[in-house]
Image 1 (cartoon, rainbow, N blue to C red):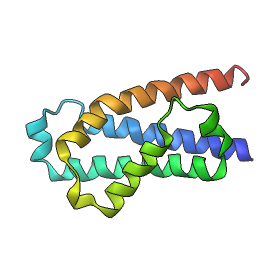
Image 2 (cartoon, rainbow, N blue to C red; image 1 turned 45 degrees about the vertical axis):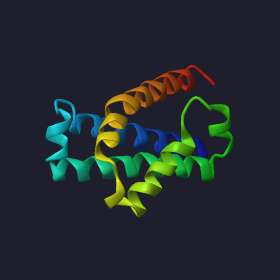
Image 3 (cartoon, one colour; image 1 turned 135 degrees about the horizontal axis):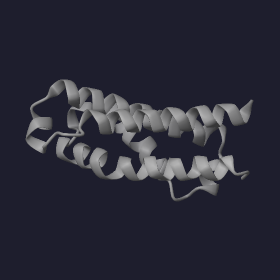
Length: 120
């Protein structure tokens, strides 16, 4: 059961990251800065990514230690910042995070999933 929960959290993280990337796929910075709906959707996706990371850290503490290439604490920290200081977000940095950091995270999660499927 514990492994199923861990896989579920990883799936949630990847799904939310993919959605955030899809939300801004064809957007330039000016478009993102003027689109409040997309800003809020991206912020919620970042919250979901960070929440899944936080749950993994809390319920499967060995897993982040075994996979330090994934920025667990940063994801949790961004989640907390979005939730508690939403109006302080620097939107150009949020957009860069989605366009640069989340594709890298998605790739890491894909690699992790394939590695685990082969019998970690």
